[in-house]
Amino acid sequence: MADTRYTPCVVLPGIGQSKVELVGKNGEKIKMAWPLDINGEELLGKLKAPLMKMMLFRKDAGFSDKVASVLAEAADPVAVNPDGTMKNNVRVVTYPCLAQCNEDEKRFIYKMVPMQKLTEVIGEENLYFFAFNSFGEPYKTARALDLYIQQVKEETGSDKVNLVAVSLGGALATAYFDAYGHKNDVKRVLYFVAALQGTHLIADVMEKKIKTDDPLALLELFASRDMVEKLRGLTGMLPPGVLDATMDKALDVLLNNTVCNSGMLWATVPPDRYEALAIRHLSDTKHAALRAATDKYWNAQKNLKSILAERQANGTEFFAVTGYNLPLLPIAASDKLTSDGIINTSSCSLGATTKPLGEFYTEQEAAENLYISPDRTVDASTGYLKDATWYFKDQFHDATAYNDTALEIARRVLSDDGFRDIFSDASLPQFGEASDNRK
Image (cartoon, rainbow, N blue to C red; front, top):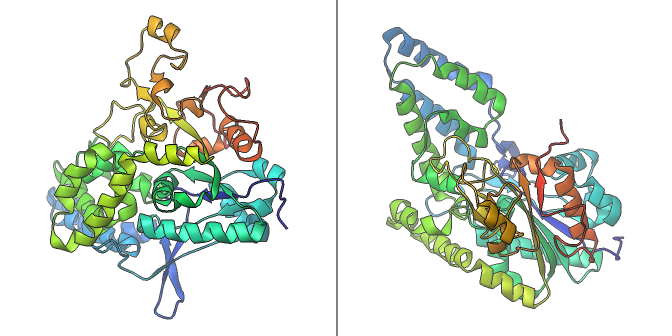
């Protein structure tokens, strides 16, 4: 039985934190669809013959086409149809409350969201992990989340839940509050490096506005670092022009087969860049259903402050944690935005003003505005949650889950009703430094 002194907590995980299986006609598991189950050695083996031919003739000789076809095959388990539905039959691996999970499930969930200090207080029976398809449809997933929340309330006897929206989970939370927020089922929300206004990284990818200094950085979103490093070792051997042609065709595969057909990934496009990208990718009739769905989400994204204000008026409290002072991944052409490497800080903070990397507020401006960061690069006063957002300098996106101070803030937000803002505990100031307890 859940400890009724505490509000049950539901985690909405990020893009790489839910397992999705590729299943057959009879529901049998074929293999893991997401994260991609890629055999690096097998993949490199398929490229060996065209690579040798390319090196022999010192020209493309079909190498870039082979890379594109191999990539399409490898990523096919998460291919999405133009109407936003999945191409293949897939099944999300779901979980009960943590207390009812087996040891392997617990190990996985704690690896994704290291919240042991929280469960020491509220109990594992009060922690739930809402796994979902990262390439699915936001409003259909929001419906599933609403049903999940009703189940949690029934199991725990609580009239409300707390939500932890991690990264892509922030986009899901927007769809949820737009469609189901009126039910007043949520007491507190912690946006943890959450994509509230998208990320310019995904918009740059959709626009094919990327840099090729380190083109394989894009694959780090989809494949293991080990495999990416092996492929990176090949890039220096390529004849002139082959790398650019290869990356262009590989990017087309990702865009046409998955990225530009996924409603959830469209939910990570910044609202000020959505219209132009939608015209570019979603104007044909085969994308009509998807366009209607993405337009609906875009409207909610633009009006998120009003949606949250209505929830706040009904008692829901919102908090946020974000990193800053890092450029986006090196493929991003938007290389002057301060970010956590994946999501720009202005998105995670819902409106904080940030100086371009390398620029600073004046000392006088900092003296007159206590919300300006000590390094004079972020003005938190313009963020929607200006008194309830914590910033960590040089903190990379994924590693925020291993920042002890960020985890302590999460524990306090989700277990202590008296912890209300950046002024609640002097040991947890608004601006902190990066750390990674894995090291």
